Image 1 (tube, one colour):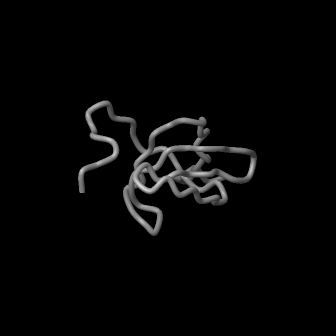
Image 2: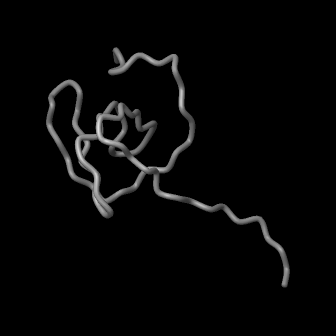
Amino acid sequence: MEKNRVVVFKPYPFEIGQKIYIDSGRRAGDWQVAAVNETKVTLRCPVTHKEFDWARFCYFVEERDDLDWPSKD
């Protein structure tokens, strides 16, 4: 069998209370994880405190200790 380069994605194991930043797309911006289960994640805007339920969608890219949250822009 031929070997190929394959990109493998895994859903991120969200934890309640995590502060996250989504870099692009319609969900871009700062969020806090309000709830999580096997199929959905509830994210809360740190400015308006509105919450949104979405199917689990995020994939881990990097973790940084030097970012302002929520961002100033």
